[in-house]
Amino acid sequence: MTTHSHTLTIAGQPLHYTDQGQGNTLVFIHGLLGNKVQWQSQIDALKANYRCIAIDLWGHGDSQTMPENTANLKDIASQLLSMLTALNINSCSLISLGTGCAIASEMALLSPKNINALVMINGFIGFEPEVNCVKYQGMLDEVQLNNGISTALAKQIATLFFNTQAQKTAVKTDTVTNAVTNEIESASVDSQISDKAMAALAQQLTEINAVQLSALVKFVPMAIYKRDTLEDVERFCLPSLILASNNNKLRTPLEAYLMQDTLDGSQLTQIPNAGHWVHLEQAEQLKQLISQFLQQH
Image (cartoon, rainbow, N blue to C red; front, side, top):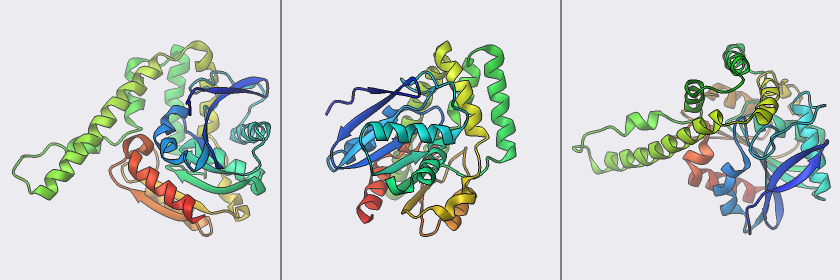
């Protein structure tokens, strides 16, 4: 099935998405600075048994604008639910990453009867730690001051999304045992994936046009200063899978454990040799984990 983008007008603005496969519906929600195309490896593995819809959030990918009345992630969650209604989708499971996890949790709270299961990858649905808010606000201030993202800042941001530890692991002598050699070769492959993806993200950030930048600048504070949905998770009555990368520069293992402790019946799995964008770095392992969870539920 073609992967070309479809468009729906939501709250007066075009929202882009892909729609592939058939069966029970899975909705893929990327995080800050991501896009719908990044999920393609997972979708290719799942579309034989599921209808897979991947969305470009406002200010990301092909969805370069944002409705004027959008004030927070809860508004975005409501808009995505409106999109599902327009597509006559009454029941779905959500596959989310990063900021997408907070949006997915808002969707589950707004429309619990329509959400069957929730996969949250490298996200945190509580308040953003203050130290992170200060750091990210500083980056945002620089972007607004310069009316764009400089090459230096783009490289700095891109590095945060990947497992650069793999690059260090890959530098070894050839006198090691076969087992360690295999591990090193695997780390080298991971490193190549990370290097290529980091360069692509950095270039993408420097090339953002004025229209998209305006929407992105509105989106970022919503992600940084999101509300604490952990306070409402006792209302969650759905199977939940929490996935956390072990070399994530943007989220901590403590946050993943806190979510597991708070969400009754949730599962937590840590993914080795991966950074924040694990769906790119460890695509095969992520496909297996998601498939197993969906089969169970």
